[in-house]
Length: 248
Image (cartoon, rainbow, N blue to C red; front, side):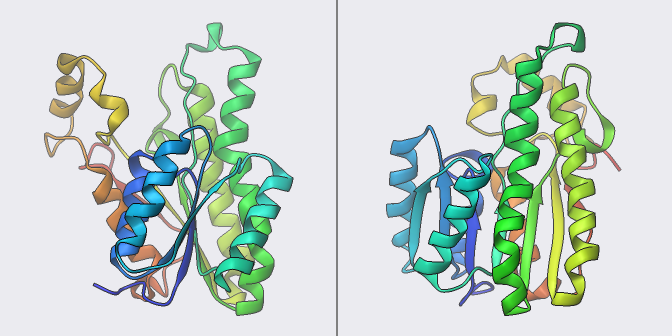
């Protein structure tokens, strides 16, 4: 406990799933937590109350990280409210799956903007503060699909592959300023989204994984705690896969 005590973290897209698990783990480890939500207003408000019960400062912001000006305003507000920004977790993301021949331009643009452009927006906005501090940990949530590709997910795979290239470039640019940049690549993680799927289909996915199960959001969050903490002080420019050996 207490691995993140004294640190301020900003997590995008934290009202549910993996983002929510990261926010809770961070609060348990003593971090002050700022987080964003967009459409899930009630869930965002409930999370703010839940995080505060850990005895840390927590605040939710309704903000669209894919909007450049909104991201600038968000980071400015967080720094003003919390006094610093030590960890930035870019988790906000969507899927608009379809075969390439049926994929619309809108579906492509929406996924690239929300998944990839949001990383550029928030990192650029946080850059100034972290450079002044001469410290900071940037954690971008990518996917195994960004490494191996996946039929029917050309837009999603491209956005997640872009995040990996972006993460590595930021690590090279900002390393001399004491800022680290890493990515976490989840595999098949069981969240609210998978609960509504056909159980036979989900079990087929589990059976194809060497560890014979899907991952938990908390297991992705554990990797993010490690990368946000001082235990990973010499780790930068890396992609940590959390996937039960489905891709090695």
